[in-house]
Length: 228
Image (cartoon, rainbow, N blue to C red; front, side, top):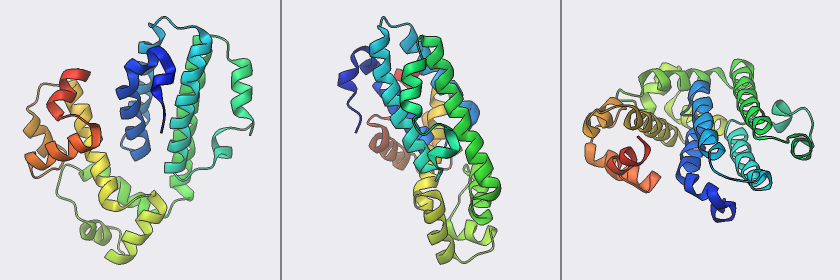
């Protein structure tokens, strides 16, 4: 667990950090969405009065996010950072906010580059095809059986293979993806919440409200009020 209380002014961005982490960890964010989320978070922090040594504490929080993201995507640290001692190297060479800003964005892009390369060769084609199917059809009713048939393997085999390759059960991956898409819609427009629930694939508005609050600690209405 990350203890944000130790990060002074960064405590104000705790919810944003958690949402960024959830989005990256679940792979619900694509490259563009992840970069925009990082940019927004960094801008909020840049405008807060904070000496560089305090900002370095944020570096470790962000590093924690990167490590979880790398693990979630089944990547190797060596795929992202050429120098195994990259943490000390960064702390010794990064001097200004702009230096850290560039380092963070380069790291995010390197992770997505490595993930794309892995998807093309390292990840089983059935799982890559299933994830692509989810991204294109999450707004519809999707079952494990549907996707298993789509990738031409048995339901039992697909369930086991997906969990091994993607790092979590198919149902949880789909749920995470839908929730993150709901967050994007809540932040961006004025569409009614029950319509958003259906637009991202939930068949019950009440279930959407309950699972959203369980995941983010607030209702969709509260989330919209806070992050718009």
